[in-house]
Image (cartoon, rainbow, N blue to C red; front, side, top):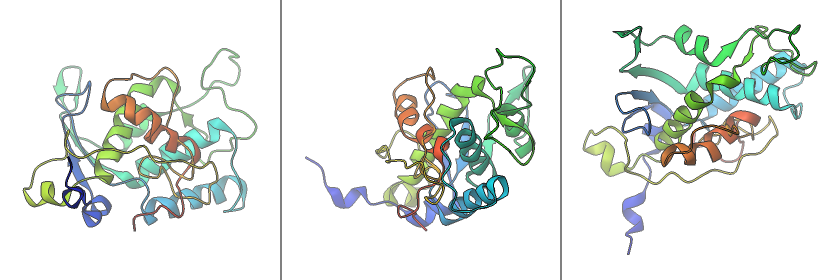
Length: 225
């Protein structure tokens, strides 16, 4: 049996940001992030859609564009900090530029076999696209966004990081940019879902949740703010 009163979510913390640890396949990593369906994330998603298409309410259907919109929104608004990062065996500090270098890339339009080759429907502001080879990182982030969204009041009062505690329900993600980014894990109505990404416990949950969100952008009516 379950006492549902003990499953209430600390919405203020979900919006302000929480530390998430016990991440599947990333045991030494801690990520500080917010939920992905906050008003701030939804506003950022809308700004990006307007920059790309000239209309904030434009319905984005191109998968590559949704990938970019959701991940760019996550980097700009939801990811706050990371601990436990290394490069070449040496510890490094987190920076926005660091995660951008992992999640985004310059496509090669002359290579028909480039998995990141852009389509005419993806006029990204910086000319970059989401790097599809970063699927494992995307799944990890999706897991963290889900945990941040469902952090329990009791856990936060105890001052513990959000790990395996707290169920992470997969949010329904819409594909219309009018909805907020990755509703808990989806932005603008899309999911962060990526075929071929690792599916391990929470990571698998993230694929169907956060990744789905990252593909189409933030959800609207499901915002927590």
